[in-house]
Image (cartoon, rainbow, N blue to C red):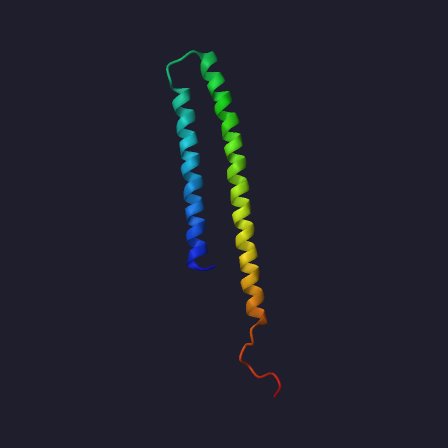
Length: 91
C-alpha cells in the first residue's frame, strides 16, 4: 500500500469519525434540551432514523472505496507477477 492509499484511508476514517461525533453531539443535545418528554422522544426517534440512513450511506461509501483499494492491490500484484524477475532460469 502506497502513501496515497494510506492517506485516503486516513482521510476516510477522519470523515467517518467526524460524522459520528457530530451525530453523538446532536443526540446528546436533544436529550438535554429543556422540552417535554413527548417532544424529546419524537426528536430522538427522528434522529435515530436519520442516523440509520447516514450509517448506511457511510457503509456504502466505505465499502465502495475498500473494493476499489482491493482491486488496485490485485492489479499491482498481477503486474508484479507478469514482470521478469531478472533471474535467468534457463541455466
